[in-house]
Image 1 (cartoon, rainbow, N blue to C red):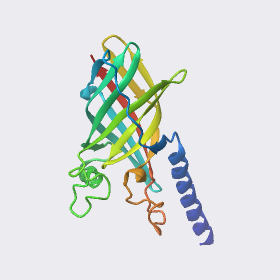
Image 2 (image 1 turned 90 degrees about the horizontal axis):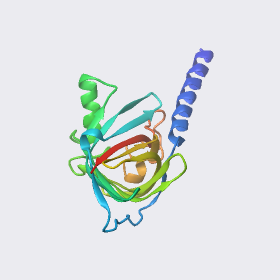
Image 3 (image 1 turned 135 degrees about the vertical axis):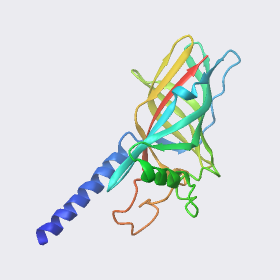
Image 4 (image 1 turned 120 degrees about the vertical axis):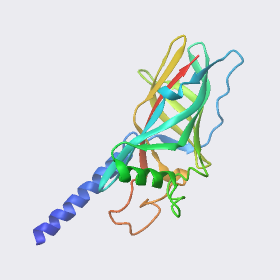
Length: 221
């Protein structure tokens, strides 16, 4: 009996440790909102191709994880020469999609995340009140084999400045931006449900504060 208890505790600690390690992986540098970049008169607009652009998400907890996608609704990148001077894209929060569940379980999780369940609207993203999120560029800086994308991310009317690594490719008619996976701390945007940094006595029933994101963006002239 004693051995069983010890083994159970060991498994729990390993699970919690795994979540903690994942939380700190590729964490985006986050700070207060900054002045957004402005394009010069010579800049050319590249419109975001919503059908070819998406954001992948991955959330974890001690007992498992979920992953899926969110659609990018629209956006524009302003380009002069070989440089992106400014830009913005809009995220359609009503398109939160889970890819690891099916049927009723999938529908229930998506409804909870979007806040379309009565009495649970504020747990996560409350999409009826906050149907979109936005990202506005402050800069894209070349960093050798990749670029550092910097901008203001607004979710639920809360704005923070984030920085994440990405590969940016440009040609005459198209720009592609593919980020490396990075994490943001959801509580900085007021998404506090199940957070052990906000609530006490959750035991192993907490949900990691960090959400892993991967941004894939295509913009065309």
